[in-house]
Image (tube, rainbow over all chains, first blue to last red; front, top):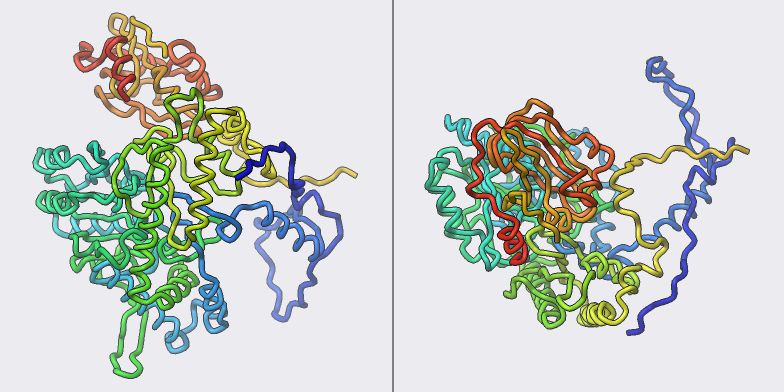
Length: 501
Length: 127
C-alpha cells in the first residue's frame, strides 16, 4: 500500500459553536407556556448565562462537520483492545426508536409498561443463561458501576455472616485499572498478585496468600477472563478453588466476554458474580455513543443482594404473566435513577434475538479466530511477549530491538495516517510499549489483511524513515497533540468566546 | 541510564540517599524514562509517618499512574513543593531537583533488600 506522505491539512478545523454565535439569532421558537408559571428561586437566577445564538442550519452543519472529523467504527477499522469496539448493528437502533419504547415515561405504572418489563425480564434471563448465573440485575450504568455493585454485594454478604474482617480483595497485576479503583471505592483494600511468565496469575503466590495469615481477611478476588493480555487463565479452576477455600468470593470482570460468549459459562467455573458490558459484548454503543450498561450476574448466594430494581413475574400466568419491578430483599441499594439505561437493554435484547444461541457462539469463534489470524501474521514482525493462542485480543510490543527511539505511541500515531484507529497502547502495564489489538468478529478477511499490511509497512518505515513515525500523524485534521500540556492544563469546559465586535 | 553509586535502589524503582538519621527519596532514571512525561505527583504531608515499603504517594504520566513506595521507614520532614507546578523536574533531573521527600528515619534503616547502583543497573537491564 502507498503511504500517504504529504504533510497537509485535509480538513479545515471547525470553529467552536460560540465563535459562530451572533447576538439575537434564534434557532428555535419555543411554544407558549400552557401551564401556570411559577417563580424560580431567586438564588438560582442569573443573567449572565451565555449560550451560543445560532440558527438551526448552523447547528446542523457544525455538528455534522465535527462528526466528519471523527473516526468511528462506522467509518473505519477500530482494533481497540480491551474495549471491544464492535460494530453496532443498525437494527438495534431501529428497535430502540420504536415509539412504544422511545416515548415511554419511566414513571408509567406497571400496567402500562408490561412490554418493556417483559423485555427486561427476558434480557435478565438470557444474560443469566449465557454466563451460567442464577440471576441478573440490569441496573448498573457502566462496567465500573457493575464492578462497584459486585464488590458491594461481596462485602454485604460477608457482613451478614459476621465476617466483618474480610476487607481485602486480590487483584492480579494485569487487571483493568478499574478493578483496584473499585476496591478502594468500596472501602476495601487491594492485595496485588504477580503474573507468571505465561501471563497467568502466579498460582504459587496466590496459594501463599490464601493459606497465609491474611486468609481470613480475604473478601474475594477480581479477575478478568481472558486476562487483559488476551490470554485464557489456564489454571482458572485452581484459582477459584484456592480463593473459595480461603472463604473469599470470586468476581469476574466480564469486559472480555467476547472471547467466551456461548462457549464458556463463568458461573460454571465457580464465579460468584460478574459484570457484563452490554456496550462491548452485546453491541450497544460505546464511548461517546453510550451510555453503557454494566449488568451484573450472580450465583445463588448473592441473589438477594442485587442492586434494585430487578424485574420479576409477580403474577404467574401461562399466557400473560404480570411483570413487576422488585427490590431484592437484602439489596445493596440504588445505583442509578429509575431502571438503568433502558435504551441499552433494548439494543442488547435485539442483538441477542438477531443472533440466537448458535449465532452468539459464532460471534465468539470469529472474534477469537480473527485475533489469532492477525497475531499469527504479525508475529515475525513485532515481538509477542506471550506467544500463546490468544482469546479475542492479543498484545505485542511496539518497539524494535534494532531501531532506537521508536515507541508504541509513534506506531499508533502513524496508523492514523492509514485511516486506522490506533490499538490501545501502554496497557496492560506489565508489557513494555504494549499495543493491545482486538479486531472483533465483524471484520472481513480483506480488512484484516489490509491492517496486517499496514502494520508491516509501518515496521519497514520505522527502520528506513523513522521520522515519518516520529512526526505522525500527517494527514489527520490536527497533527500530534501535546499530551503533557493536555494533562497539566485542564480546560474542562468551553468558556464562551464572544467576539468583541 | 544514569545510576549514581552513592544511592541505594528499591525493586520498585525508588532511590534513597541516607545521611545519618535522615534520608532523601526520589524516582530512578529508569522509572522516569519508563513513565515518560510526568504530569502530576501526589506527595504526603510533612509529619506523616510510613512503614518501610508503604505507599506514600503516586505519580502520573501521559502513559500511566503508579504508586510510589518508601524504601525505608520514616517520618516526612520536607516534600519537594516545586513538583506541584513542575513535575517534569523528575524527568529532567531525577536525582537532583526532582527529589520527592526528605525523611527522618524512625528506626535504623533496613537496607538489606535495597540494591547497589551496579546491581540495580543489571536488574533494569533484564527487564
